[in-house]
Image (cartoon, rainbow, N blue to C red; front, side, top):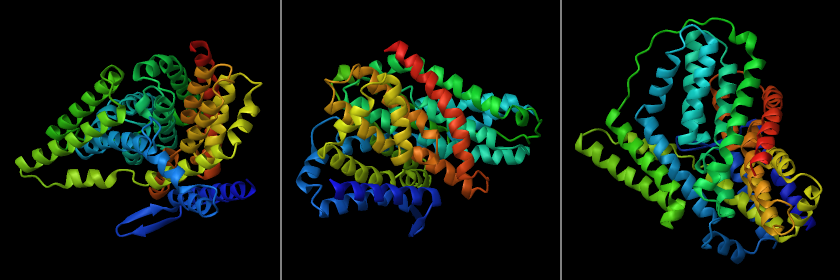
Length: 435
C-alpha cells in the first residue's frame, strides 16, 4: 500500500507540474502535452511493482459493462466528431459572428450575447468542443473591437463548464457517472435541469459583477460578413447531430447503449461527408482536418487514470474516503469533495474515484441518488476552480497563452474561486431540493 501511495503521489505531482508549465513534445507536425502521458507511466510503474495485475486490468477494459473505459472514450470521441465537422463547415464562427454582430458598441450586450450563445452551443455539443472552437473567435473579436477580452473569455469558460451539466453528453464525467449508475438520458435531464439553470444564472451574475466596470466601456467593432463556409456540409453534420441526440434520448426504450448510437451516427457522418465531398469534387480537407482535430490526448490520459483509480479501489481506499463524508450532508459533501479532488487529479479521474466510492459503499450512503448527482455537479463546476480541474481548463489556458492573452495561473485560480464557490453552493442547494 505504501508503494502504491508513493507512486500515485509522485504521479499526481508530476502531472500538476506538466499541466502548469504546459510542457509539450513534437510528434511530426503535431505537439502533444506531456501531462497526458504521466498517468499512463504511473500505471506502468504500478503494474511493474505488482500492484496492478495485468489480467485484472485487461478484464476491466474488455468487460461488458456500462463503465467500460473503451465505451466511455468511444462515446466522447464520437460525439466530438459531429462538432469538429460543424466547425470545419464554419458553423461555430458563423453563429458567433451572427451573435456578436447584434452587440453594436455595447459591451454589456456583447457579454450577455456571448453567454447565451455559449450556453446553447454547449448544451448540444460539449464544453470541450465549445472551448476549442469559440475561444479563438472571442479573442480575435475583442482585439478587433479594442476591448478587454478577459471578461468575455472567463464568461465563455465558466458558461461552458456550467451548462455542460444539463445533458448527459455534455461532459465525459456526466457520461461516466450516468453509465456507472444506470441513469437514463431523461432521468438525468429531469434531475439536472433546475440545478443547471441555478448554476448558470449564478455564474453569469458573479462574472458580471466582477467585471462590471470594464464592461461599461464602449467598443468599436468592425462589421464582418456572416457567411457559412460550407452550408451543405453544416446541414449534413447538423442533421446527424440532431438525430444522434434524439436517439440518445430514447436509447433506454430502444435498449441500445449510448456509445453504440453515437459511434454509428459518427461513422455515418464520415461516410456521408466523404460522399458529399467526392460528388461536389471538393478537397477532402474538411474531413481529414476533422479527424486530425479529435482530442486524442484524452486517450492515454484517461486510460492511465482509470488504471490508477483501479489500484486505489483494490487497496481499500474507497472505504476510507467514504468515512470522511459519512457524517455530512451527501449533496454538499460529495459536491464539494469532487470539486476539490478534481483540482488535485483532474475531474475525470476524480469522478471515476468518487463513483467507485459510491458503488462500493452504496448500501451505507444516506442518499445514493443525491450523492451521485452531486458528484456530477462538482465535476462540472469544479472545473473552473483552477486550470487543473478539467481538460477543458487545460486547453482553454493553453489557447490564451499561445494567443498572447495574459492570464496567470494565480489570477485564473483567484477568478475561479470567486465564481465557482457561490455557483456550486447554489447548484447543490437546488439539487438538494430536487432529489
